Length: 75
Image 1 (cartoon, rainbow, N blue to C red):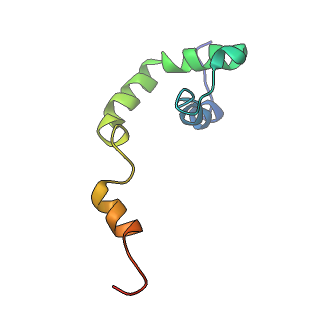
Image 2 (cartoon, rainbow, N blue to C red):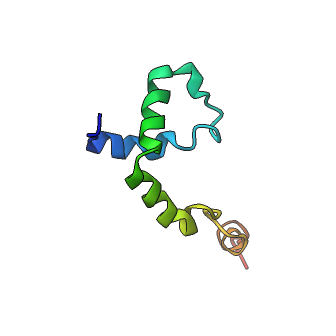
């Protein structure tokens, strides 16, 4: 099957970090099959390669943590 839908595009990023979420796709064979098909699509590979500079870094930097969490009511 070469076609995929907006639902596939929307769901894939939620499933991609399954290992980090301690989920084993072997427990969900249909989901695993779908995930492997999506993961091997050239467009998906290209998109994630282009996004790597932004997705392979922490969401909040150490400096950002100081700004967000290091403040007190009275500084």
